[in-house]
Image 1 (tube, one colour):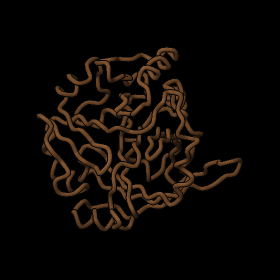
Image 2: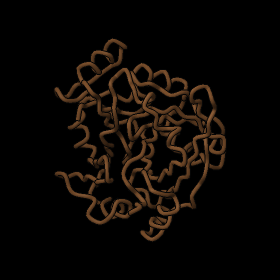
Image 3: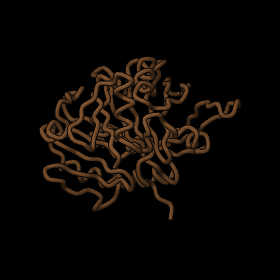
Length: 281
């Protein structure tokens, strides 16, 4: 059975200065893909590809009607901006979101050039965006890959830091549980549950955790969130070997925090305003 939403596809990290962000993520031990351009959207990106998901750093290179909201968002600093959801079809997702009362935009088609084996190909997508009025702190949208063979390639999923995939996303929200009804419009009835005073949303794959600022600071001591108020704050990444990852990052001169033996935290100053968490599971 085809599904309008079937988990997390990728995460978007907005950066104010894509050259510096590219250098920062190379220093963090990722295989950073060559820059791609979305001519229609006026944006450029670099991808960190994993086996079944990825994250991208995205910057504005030309002002267009499609990036006005992103330009406004960047005025308060960069960081984790969006979670893209996997789907069996943009049209299917559009109809499901409309029925759920999420007021989605019509599907938008765009592409970007990628070079594969010396040949230029066009990676093509259709996305469905949801307006701010229906945003449970996170800016969700659906991403329908029309040419997944030009995105998910095993040779691109090999990273010096041993990264293998996304473990989850953490959101700062002063009233975490108030977002449950809106989240269930995306992920279905019963897809959220309380975690202490927080909330976790089951996307179908990786979870999205909602924590109050107080609980966030307790879980990530020494990390100062870049943005005020409620916002997506942290991306957790799975690595094959945490000790090897730590050794590489230290060798590269990356400042690290180690709240316990099972986690490494990279503060926003080292990752273009994103807080990164590395763990084996």
